[in-house]
Image (cartoon, rainbow, N blue to C red):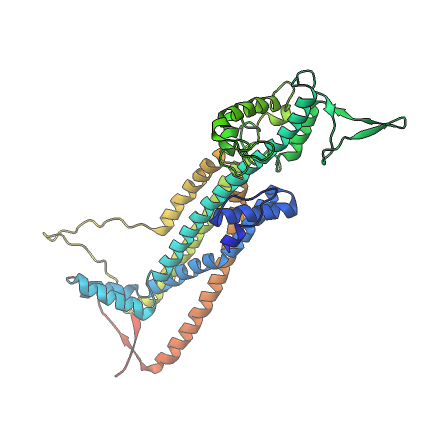
Length: 440
C-alpha cells in the first residue's frame, strides 16, 4: 500500500520520497488538492492515521488489562511455588512457566503489542517529521520559482533597475497582458515590482490561523528565510532552482557556483526591504500558541494514560483479593550467606514510570515544535487530541469486553466446580480460599 501511495502525484510536482515518508507526502498532498489548506489537510491526515491504528491500541489495552487480572489471580500460587522451590531456581522457572501456561497468563501478548505499538509509533512519527520537512522544502522551492518569474518580468522590462519602482505591464495567470478601458480604448495596466511581488508572495504562502507561514516555526522566527536557510532547504529538493534553470535544464556542475551567485542576487532583490517583500514577510511568524498547545495536549494524553494504569492496577488488586483466600501470603526474603536479610533491588512500577513521563513528554514536544515547522506542531496537537478520544473509547470497550468474559468464566467455573470442590484451610495463612480441587 505504501509503495502505491508513494507514486501518487504531489500537487504541482513529484513527491520525490519513497516508503512511508512518500506515502505521508502523497496523502497530505492529495488532501490539500481537495481542500486547499495544508493545515486542515494535516489534521485530516492525522485523523485517518489514528483511525487505522485503533486495532493496535485496542489490542495493547486489552492484553495489558487481561494479563493484569490473570497475574493477580495466580499470585498466591506463584508465591507458594517460590517457597516450594526456593533452593532450585531451574525447577521454579519450569513450575512458573507451567503455571502461566495453565492460566493463560504471562507477558507474551502484552509485550508483543506494546513493542509493536511503540516501534510503529516511533516509525510513523519520524516518517511524518521527514515528510512534512519534505513538503515544506518543496513548497519553498515552488514559491521561489513563481516569485522568480515575477522578478524576471519586471527586471527585464526595467533593464535591470528596480529601484525606481520597477513598473511593468500586469500579466494574468496565463501570462497575457491585462487591459482596462480608458474611454473606449483598451490600455495596459501597469504595476510596481513591490505590489506585484507582494501579491505573488501572499498568493503562494501557506498560512493557518494566526501562523503566517506553517513551513516556519510558530515562534519569533522571521516569516521568510534568509538566503542561507533557503539554500539549505531546497538543495535536495527534486526540481530545485539550485540545480535547474528557468527553462528546466540541469545546470552543469562547473556552472553551479555562478548560477547560485546569480540566484542569491535575485533572492536578495525579491526580499529587499525597500522595494521587495514588505512587512508581510517580516516580523514574528507566530505567537508560540501551537507549541504550548502541543505540550498541553501531550500532558493531558499522558494523564489519561496514567489513569488507565491506575485502573488496571486497581483491577489487579481486586482480583488478587478474590483469590488470596486459602494461601498464606508471605514475603519472600532474600537471605545472604550469614542469614541476614539482603536488600532487594528496586522494581519499576509502570504507573510510576507513567507519572514521570507525563512531565517529560511535554518538554520533549516543546523541544520538537520550537525548532520545527508549525505543520509538525499541528500534527502533534491533532494526534494527541484524536488519540485521547480513541483511548477513552478503547478503554470503555476493553472494560466491557473483559467484564463480559470474566462473568462468563466465573459462571463456567461455578458449573464445572459444583459440589466437588473442597476447602483447604491453612491455620497459619492470613487468607483462605476454595481450592477448586475435585474430590478423588
